[in-house]
Image 1 (tube, one colour):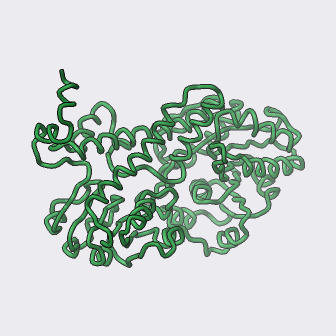
Image 2 (cartoon, helix red, strand yellow):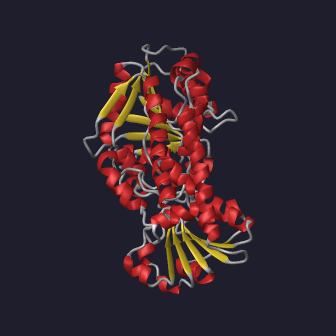
Image 3 (cartoon, helix red, strand yellow):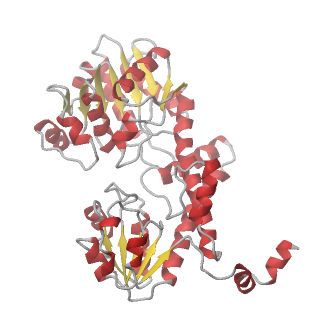
Length: 452
């Protein structure tokens, strides 16, 4: 197939590489001339796993980048639009970049005789396709849906560090189609890349828009539920959050169900806020997504209090893992950076280490925290270390150099590493004391009233 991709950010270039490696002829469009030149000149590089390998095995002429939207539309029959939809001041998603792409696509279609289908990949509010995007496309192109103009809403369910996996081996494929022919075309493009037999969900654009944002909100709800259990178990003697979530997983599943640090990143926090804002706008009760967002902030403060109780002013605290999750350099809404800021405000000296995100973290924090070249250097420089992310490099670290205490927010260290540590504190596990004594000292007669 002849396909164009508007927007060559982390996800757009990954989608382009997967499409072209699958044998499609792809033209990528981006406004950044330096990026376009690097892609065409062979100097482009990315840390996203699998992208460089797929670009390398793309046949000659199978992928090209351009700043010219008209060229891309002329040389393709299907366009994927994957441009930013940033949060706006009211909590929704701004469509300004989507509109710009629609205007460019529409203008190019005025000079094209054949049919063309547009698939929006970017996350948008429910109703955006039919109320805002399709009218913009129709006005810009002088065409109507069904009259040489097709449309789909076709979001991806991906995570940074695993974008190729999310595209080629999705849990399911979601297509919101304005007409069946458009859906068939998008499905053919997706199937050319897919390496599994993922289920296919075809529905209207507005149903697909609700499905996409609901998916992220449900995932944050699961994370927060597990973190609620984390908070309980951290207080109750003899309780382990892992034993409880492992038991619950028999009925509730394991995905995103491990008590640890608050969720972050570029998608989950803003999607909860956006769904809340949309539900408020249409008059639907929005307490559930709003409560999840509030709890995530409360849980962050709970973890902070635990760490503050184990540290003192002027102590050096090492933070292992600075990105919002392992396997990526993205630090957007990363709990580690919030923790570092809060600790410095409380008089702690912070040293950080991260295998991928030190340069990004340093741009965010400036001189507020120090950065270590290796994990061992971070441990040596710190009186107390905090594992914020369950990094795959952790088993390779020489934990014998840790001077005093290691606080493990994920309880991810193995027995061999723990034996080398002077004091190991697995957050999410209660003390070894007796429950009855703890209740008597912490709750007192109130517990008797609760059980009378």
